Length: 464
Image (cartoon, rainbow, N blue to C red; front, side, top):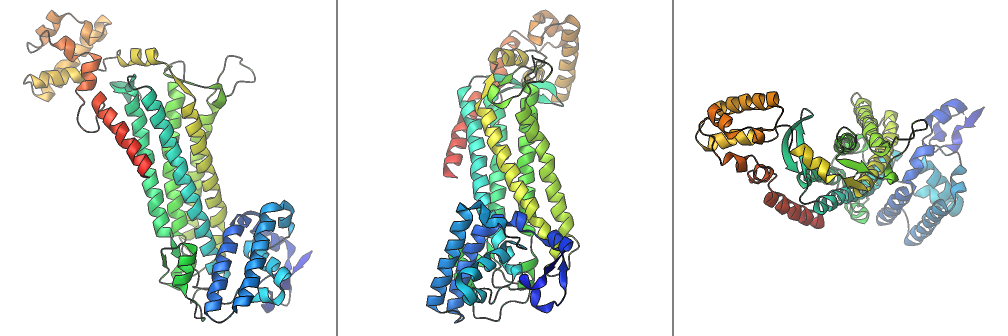
């Protein structure tokens, strides 16, 4: 079965019929109808510009405004409104406009192409979604600060290579993820700024012949400026790729958080417990409590990364200007928005429902020679070169391992025999509190520094 090409916006050139299989393959309305509201908004601005260009009268513009508003209201209130088999959202809106306004609706496309139309719509839509994601990142940061402030004295072991390394405050751990997400917000803001340029008025590729005031259209739609080159404007998807990159880094950070949460909630670590609200059970093993929420976040990171690669691959070989390949941008961008938003929401929910095992965490932070570096620094402060101190403490650790005890449990006489610089004050130097307190430079895990960092983080979040 074939379709009449005359039913499409481009049918005038064609005398034959479009193969129905190709028509379905070519159709994007099933997913790009998400752009309907912004398509209407951009069409209103273009309509006003056509008045200024003497293509439409004020009365005609009012009729078109009313018809476009009716389309928007129907689309928002009636799911069946979308059952029409349109090629894309732009042809759907134009067809509905002609149904309501008659031949007047055929005038609206004067001076524009679907090429600059879709580029404008996608920027408008994504600009709003970036704002929503920006807020969602902030809510996840807020959840991190809330749990950090609820456990100001909690100490946990810090790790490198998944081996216990040095003790840190739990709040310091939370602030590490806060900083990652803060960079994500900066990147999203930068993407939004570069994206906020109006392509409308570029037409298909060469610009428009009508005296459209592009700056006025930009102001009406909230764009900071207009594109400077029509060829680039209709074929640019840098903003989508940049967004995919920023979204990929958000997912990288959420995936790292998820991995930490999963590990720390295992029986082997036992520092965290995830609530029933964000875990599931096993169909076979009654005792199981699985961190599916965090596992899904970790898994969905790869999905977003894949979209980034797909967008880069799609664009890498395209000649100027618009090519139909670029229709592939929308499903990728739409799914990135959905995935990142959902993962941020779930991550914040998990953080707000976490229970911390303080005794287990403190026990782990005080066992396993996590104060070995502090002992080396103790020797350095007494005049020993660091490399020599490092070697000396290595021998002391070996002795403690052989004895099955911690460094502070070794007899003072034996420590003094390995280095005469070690005296009674070593006991205080190796204490957990002293180990934390000495990390007092900016960015360190000393209690005072972490308390200051929490206050600063709150202020940053409030300012954003």
